[in-house]
Length: 147
Image (cartoon, rainbow, N blue to C red; front, side, top):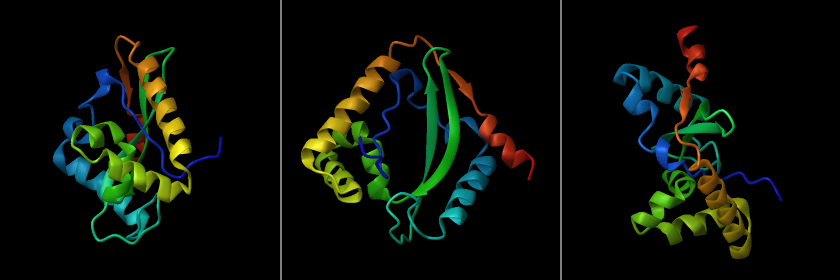
């Protein structure tokens, strides 16, 4: 399968509402998200479009065998990419079709390819939902305490 710039990132049900904004003090979250905005230089870090208003997106890896949800990055993305990343939420609020269209445009893929990618993301989420409890690994944040 071709590597995609924009990916569907379905969060396991047990990890919903676990995000840096809810865990950190507001000043710490502001510092981290503003760092992502600065690294982005006014462009979405996924599609590359110039953007007046970027959004901070947390990247996570999941170790299913050990039940660890590990923060790997915070990136600055445009609203359309962020909506597509969180396709499940987009579908719940009636923006699923727009998110799918954007995903296909950014990745230069067909509807069938997009649906196959979504199917894989859904299967990954179903498998991860079998993990009874996730432990957080926020070691990524150490780089901010060292600066």
